[in-house]
Each structure stands twice: as C-alpha cells, then as structure tokens.
Length: 98
Image 1: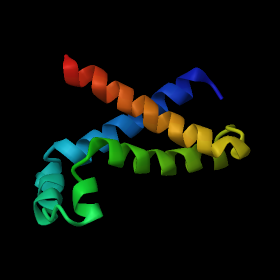
Image 2: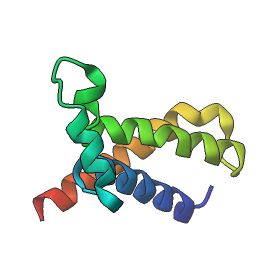
Image 3: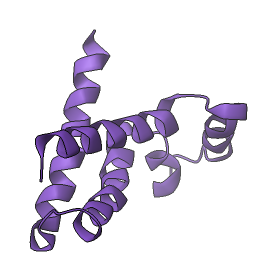
C-alpha cells in the first residue's frame, strides 16, 4: 500500500459522500433522490442526507476494490474500511469550518 493510494481513496470516499448528501448533481439527480426520500422515520431516508452515513457506506466498495485488485492485505479490510470512512469524515470537518 502506498500513501498516495490511501490518500486518493480517502478523497474519493469524501467526494462521493459529499456529492450524494449535499450537492445537486448532474441533471439534479442527487437533489431529486433526496427530495423523494424525506421521511425522517426511515433509516434510508435519513442516511441519504447524512454525510457520515454515506461516507461509511461509500468506503466499503473502495476498500473491497483495493483489497481485491490492489495490494492491500485482505485480512485488514475492517481497518481500511473504518480508516477510509474516518479520513473522509475528517476531510469533511476540515472543509466545513473553512
């Protein structure tokens, strides 16, 4: 594992989660999805608007991809998953206060 790959993976998770949770998207696709799911009593509807929830789930396929295709040790997949989600959360907090 190189630091460059880990850093790029963290930025990719951050970007995907922020795009879905807060941005309109091309053709307002993400805005339409969030508008269609407004029931605060359903976990999916709340999670689609929560950056931290989305970063947790967005980190999973990135981790699987890097463990299967990349050279990341597969037995450490939970650490990579939570680490990427945590790094994306820290990036979000950093840019949110700017």
